[in-house]
Length: 116
Image 1 (cartoon, one colour):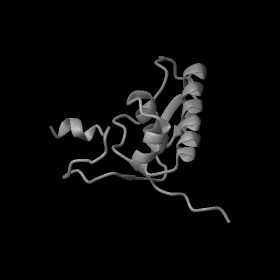
Image 2: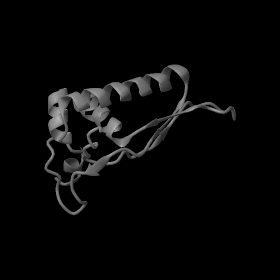
Image 3: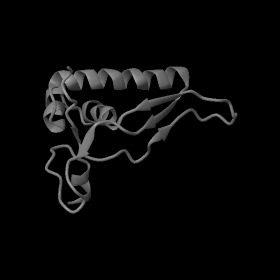
Image 4: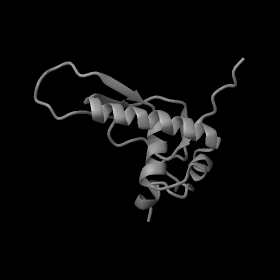
């Protein structure tokens, strides 16, 4: 019996959930689905420049889990860019790190920028 999936701590939901090619044609475009926790690993590792260990601590999961999520997210991004597919970000097994009335305690949380 597999272990139950542990919730991943996410600092915030993405501002935009849909991305895709800028074409004026009405062609049917394939869609890639990325989970919110995959988005968070991309944000923390590539944008915030955290290591996988730091990312794992912030998301409260194992480093090996971060590595797996990050690999999946990068593959999805590459497929969208190279093959011109749409990207939709939603779903996943996550919890938000704090409610909107309190400051987030996460080191690299974008909420801190708003609460100065």
